[in-house]
Length: 201
Image 1 (cartoon, rainbow, N blue to C red):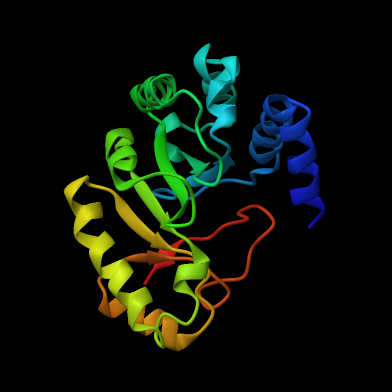
Image 2 (spheres, rainbow, N blue to C red; image 1 turned 180 degrees about the vertical axis):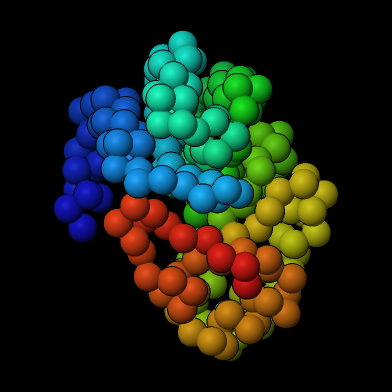
């Protein structure tokens, strides 16, 4: 897609911080309101966590200007990019959690992180990769993989979110495995204000 090309170019030219800062600002500007108990998930690369705006309270101020609280925002960190300095990255994630933001690890199962590194980050949400959800009702190995992750998520007190649910059969299988939240065309089509929608499975 055009957005993937743009982000790939930004990473290659070290413009990723500026691009993601612009995306965060646009997400807040386009927000038409958020219901009580609803959280806004913002896609964030591991690199963008280093953005000084997230550390100097600039983003917190923008969130408050929109009548929101940092506890309403989930920074959804993609797992597809390797982290060069994990200790620094872990400290930055801990700082953002201290500021009230929740943390989600996106693409769980399709990226670089081991279960140990995910456990050290203590995310609030684990988003299970759509490629592992696809046809999960037909593939025993895919079901087995998810079954091993469910107790791990409970142990670190993270909520599992299944991505890319497209059929009733996938939905029912995920529900039987104890998955509480999911997103995908079967659950809801993407909206303009809320590009990713999580619903009870």
